[in-house]
Length: 141
Image 1 (tube, rainbow, N blue to C red):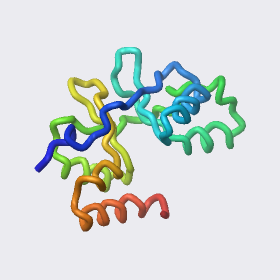
Image 2: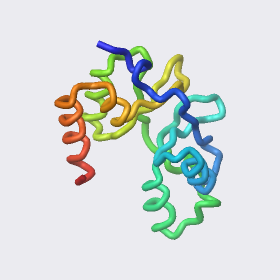
Image 3: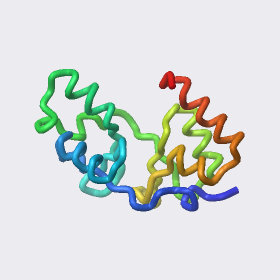
């Protein structure tokens, strides 16, 4: 079975935990993406932030995205996968945690992101269909 590093997007960028949600939103706009890893100054993964997080946990809550820092949305231990793990393990983790993307790490540093789309481009239709179905259960899609 293929390793995650063969499927992942390698040009992943982090928003620093000390950057504002406005900075994170601008980075998402510039990169044309809906989610970013949150990294500490040491380059280690601290969490993930989505455009939906910014809207619901900041804007809708009446907070100022220019004053709220990314670290405030980096709650809990982030789900991630090692670059040398097999793709099946990534799929299992996505299904278990009902997430559409996983940060990929090597030596405790972010090296990429593997998404549902990356897998869809490289995997059997049946397995991708199962993945989408399991992930979408929580999201009501």
